Structures are given as C-alpha cells and as structure tokens.
Length: 429
Image (tube, rainbow, N blue to C red):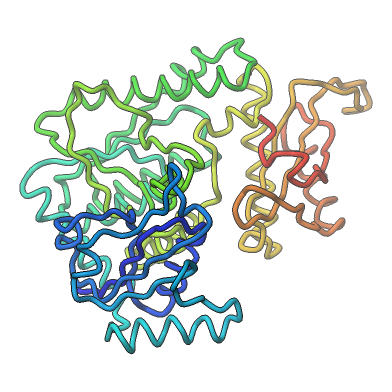
C-alpha cells in the first residue's frame, strides 16, 4: 500500500468518522479500529505513521473506563489523545482544530499527503490480484453506485475472471437495466449474466399490500434467483460485495451502538462457501463516487440517487399492480428528466414519485375518469435521520404536472408532499 496511514482508535467518541474525514481531506489515509487492537493486528496494518486515541462519552463500558492496550503505548509511534482525562482537547474552532491535527499528522508523524483516488485504485488492483489469483469472482450487480464501482474496479483488476449477475426484478427505474447491460457488457466487456425475473417477482408480489411483507418477498426472492445463478457457474471461489465504510461503522463497534445491521446480498445460503472481496470497505460514499468517475463510469451511474432495495415496490403503495407500477416508473422518469433540465438533479438529495392505491374522479376527453394521483417527493438531508423539503419553483411543478397527466396512462392528479422528516419519513412505505 502506497499511502501513509493515521490510525484512529475508538475510545468512546461519537465523532470518529468526522475525525477520519478531516484527516482524509488533508490527503492522508485513516482507518478507525477498536480500542483493544492487538499487537498482531496493529503490526499487520501498513504504513501507520501515528495513532489518535479518540475518547468520548461512551468510554465507560460495563462500568469501567476502557483504554488502549500496552502494545499501542509501546509501539514507538506518535500518539495523540483526544477528549478524555490527561488528553489534548480538539478545539471546536475550525482553524485551530485543523492546525492541531495538521501539526500532529504532518509534524510529529511525518505523514505524506499521498491519499488520492489514483493511488487507491492502483493499490486495490494489486490487492485484488493478490487475493484472487487466477480464481473466479461473482458479483451481484444492481446498477447502484457501490456495486457498479466494485464491478468497474474488478474488471480493471481481473477482467473476465469476474462474473456479474444483474437481476431485473421489474422494480427498477426506467432505463436502468438497459444501462447496466450497455455500460458493463457493451462498453467495459464484462462477463455479465442478465436475469429477467420480472414475471417471477411480480407473481410472488401479487395481492400483497403490507410493506414489510413486500420487502421480505423481494429480498428472499432475490437471494433465490442469485443462488440459482451461482450454482450454474463453475469454479467460483470469491463473492464481491459493495460494502462501504459507513456500512461497517453503522453496524457497531465495542463502544458505539449499532445503528443498523448491513447484510450485503442479503445473507446467502451457507453452503455457497465464498471468500469475500470488498475493495471499497474503507471508503466513504463521496470517495466511492470519485473512484467511479476515475474508472470511467457515466455520471448517471456514479451520481445515482439513493434507491431502496425493494425499488419501486415501495413506491407503488399497497398491492402492486402492473399498470400502476408502470405509471410510477413513467412519472418518475418525467420528474428526473425535468429536474435534470432545470438544474435540480445535483442540488436535491432525493426526488421521486409514488402512487397510492386510491383513485379520484377527474375528467378525461370530456368524460368522467377515475384515475390515480401521483405524489412528488423532493427532500434534502445530511444523514437521512432528518430531511427538509426542497422549494421547487411553482412554474416547474406546473410543467411536471402537465407532462405527467398528459403522458402517463391512468393518472389525473399530481400532488407535492410538503412534509419534512419528522413527522414524515423519506419514503412512504
């Protein structure tokens, strides 16, 4: 590994990721590890130039104050202790905070600012080749940011030793399955297995209105389809996943409670004994996007909006019907097209349409028409825990409304959701 590293040991701080991002923004690589890192674990980390003991209010565990082990204090590396007894406080004033960190990282530790996307990619290519050798790797390629960047990175590292499986469950946005095939099979030359499972998924979902039941059916069926495809292939020894750093951090450490568990690919059967390849597991989301750009992926894929695992299945509210699902897909495409043309695509964090399982009376061709309403949702957020509603110009909303009611079959009204989170969640289901 070419990059120098500053190691952050978690001693109960709730701002480990903030600290890690600040140092990475200086051009120096960081990793967050548990406070009780062993001598062997510490010795296995490459190019560690210094250690930050990051204490905080969660430092008391099971009634006692936790601390780093003797191996840390005796390793001979520069150590900076933060936010606990006998430590150096990290000033909240940005300029002073940056100077304290800079003096430690570049002064005491002598680290070089050599953390960048190109170095990361070249390091990962080397590590992937070393891990995989001449064996084969399998990847579930959804078309989302993380799996797409993993695919592009693995193609660069091992070419056709990678097999990508793209399962079209019929709940993707307009044009997404076609884009996956075009980018990966046609442009990057990937060994891509495309599975059209739309009828299979929609058949399983027929008549199911409960959101959690829908989610479980979609998740379980995806695993079955992926398992069936995996068993058709011979010589697969590795499973690639788009795990990223927030997934690991949110799954909890010894001093930080679990925010949510992450199970990429959804817990495959144990008899599919694969070794994991997770080249993005130490990257934050914006760093993943930078990698995607550097690897030549299109902006529409790199900057793809957050999209729920069940896809449009949770935006076609209640029991999914094919005609209403198609109306969701078409209205969503119009919204995305208009936001893109009017400069909102990169400004608004997430925007989409949904259709509830209700109809209202309207007028179509001079006759009474019972049709669906489309609801537009456009929100901004930093952490998805709270969200504000984007102030979309009325003129633009009027144009979008006009297009949707005239171009989307079965729709006679358009509504705009003005509810922030809380009390509303970002999705409706």
